[in-house]
Image (cartoon, rainbow, N blue to C red; front, side, top):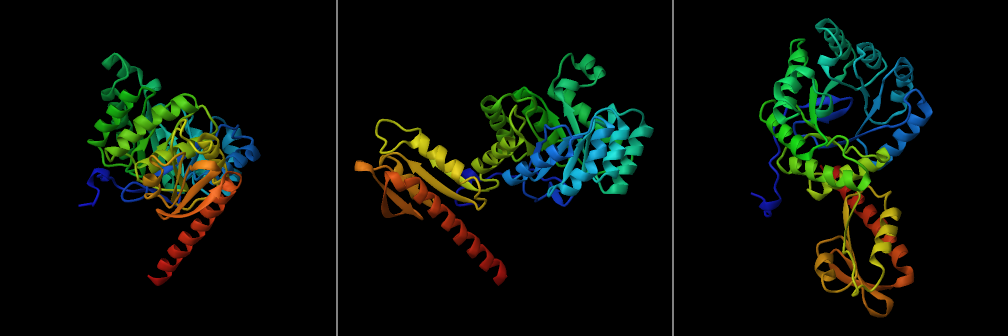
Length: 373
């Protein structure tokens, strides 16, 4: 029993697959994915965007392969990437064969959409020969006509039935290196479908609220939907779908995981919304700090509170804290203990230096523990 049982999440047991060198499912960390929005045929632009996503922390990156030019560029893209690349395939089974041969770590397909069983068998053979996983991607916006006729509209039962039909096609070919998504833009529909599917299958589940919207609206919908499922213990890999740059999807994904204590990366900022009591401009200070500390990957916490009402209490729970005071002098806390004051003009630079130094200290201690084992 945890000392804080209200924070415990009982993760759904699932079998583990490998996407390139990244384990998905089982006891592996929940991974964060995104998707490029460049023309895949433009290898340089795609690689540049992949690099930005890698720097943001992406574990797996998907690229769309709608034509031969795209799969033709894929080999160069895969070689340049530092994370596994998933090839997004729709309808054209030959693109899947080409992507597998080009080194894709995973093929995102709907087996039922790429033609006959013979074609599915060809894709599976290519996946097996090249060590590819497969992601079955069911989407409420592209459900099969027979299921729409059967159920009248996209519903959880229709999404799950579609997923099970696709799974059967792979299982019939003795292929089990797959993960499944049942996405919808409706949060209620997506969550209900994932809950039903989680009770039915043992494969890893890829979470997402599809076509979630712009940065703010899409972030909120994704946090509610993906966050609810993760809180239930459902989900092995996530993709936040935003009408925003893909590196922003990665950052939001990590923030969702961090808020649930599932996975930590970088600085977790605790800050107040500010009010007339604030001793400094909290909003602008947090904006500057988040920008200046984006390069920190070491998990740690920073509290930025404008006054002494909640400031000392929050600072006790974070690695570094600052609380607004009078006359432009503010209290700095280290490991929850009051340590020294800093003045307005030097505050942001000072906090950045403290965080960077703390990150070095944490990494050194971690390295020491690993060396002692």
